[in-house]
Image (cartoon, chains in turn yellow, blue):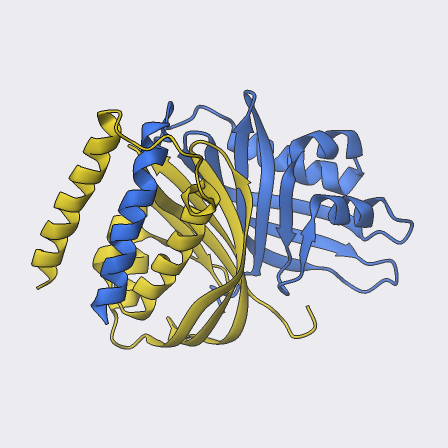
Length: 159
Length: 156
């Protein structure tokens, strides 16, 4: 079933891009949802939904090869280590979702956002039980936005 | 459970198509050639010595600093704190093991920073942190756009 979805998505993607490449894209003004900032905000949700669902295929698709993330406690992980943590059945992920997404910087190939990510669970001996302040970085590689990294720190109550 | 994700992927494909068409330069990983260690030291030395002329230029307008307690400051707010009469006193601040992850016009630096200092009331600010730093390249120059500090508990 997953492969079938992947095949359909791939065909859909080729058709969509083909229309643009042939100059058949509509000339009407871009809507809000077509802005890079809106795309990045959607990717933030996809990133965390994939983590919650332990969908490491989507995460591998989203993460750039040189991806880096710093977790609470100062633990630094690369792409493979992050995927391995998500796969680990001992990792508990009861809740993970972003709020207050603010795109702070966007250019043709770079976007930086902040969000407040609520995490309830436990990973690598670190317990998560509430809101975390996060900076996320996205880069455009070969025409596609990918996650380059994130810095995460728990918000002490009152901050 | 997978259907919403699938629908979102399809929507994303459509959203990305016009963006990719308008792309003239892609962010690709590169070794860089920048002296990231020197950049990091210059940045923190400027905060320690109060070199505000440098910091005003080096911090992008989008700059945000997230401290280890989750408190977040914008460029204006953080420079305001550093310039205020009751500013924190940084006795020493030393980044080590600076690692750069370069993606064309953005680089993510990670480092291990040791801070010694105190606030205006004499309360210690001493700490050892693993830090996530984001710098962006604009008009050929690197500018700081984000920092997340985490107390280093990796060896505890």
